[in-house]
Length: 393
Image (cartoon, rainbow, N blue to C red; front, side, top):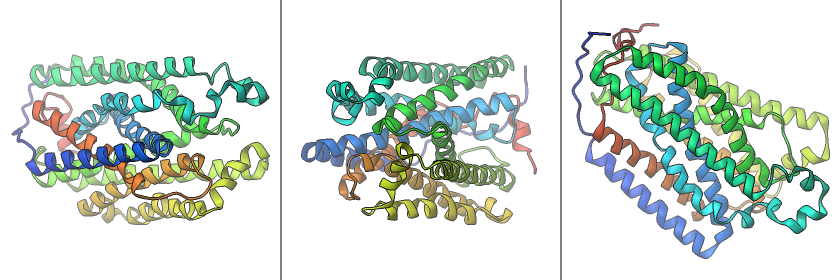
């Protein structure tokens, strides 16, 4: 059992944070409601975008927590609780998914039995792509994510009062079990909600594509919050540029990893030149979608790459906060690029597309505020905490 006492004073977050969360949630919900009222189908496709982005933050943050335990990392321990708070948005996933679960027939072509009967490809995929199995496995995804969130955060909180190292060992075991669950559930989540929108298309690395963007998005949101909290004295004393450098390096690495997977998916499909695969990219290179394709390269790769390229940039809190927001927006554009061409082969972009990004940003903020009111922002009982504060590159 650790007896190390790290000075930490818990403070309430500014009222402006709560006001932003409430305002964004209210504005987003109003736009979403109007979109569903005047263009129900468009609202559902935007709903999938919102669900995909929120899942990236929630499950990506939970992956980060499990990864720290498995790797025995110390540098991230002082702000691991930020990731724990973000992973609490897994409960909001259930709420955001409800309108979609009630309207699967309007979104997914494979739910139309008359189409399946006439299409041998859809018929061949029907043992997997059917409403009953789709519903069962997505409920299972939510249950598993909530279970592992509850276990990992429960023992982390207990350690705040007991400072007993046994809870670290328990969480290492839960993290070990979570990793294969994470790999399978995120892959099939991406296949179910995004890839099956065009059930004739397939890609063997689509799950990895979604994972790379998922972890990058969660890390970007966490980086913005961590730097903001640290600058205002809400964390523990001693965190500085060495910790920022590690966050910046992870952002830089996963920016490159996402670009590598994205290019690999494109290159392999282009090289094979199989009609069942290439049409998916062709649809995103005409009727206005080519501008989104080019913007995505610029937003999600080139800007983060050059902003984070130098060592001083990775240590600059101002740049890290900027790139955190930027990558979150870029990931939202990525989900829009993946999903919205299935609604319209011609580019559609209007006020309707603002609803879910605002709603998701508001839900993330309010969830974080709710957790921060009840729990410490720092895992004060973790035996690695002091080593994490003393970390130097």
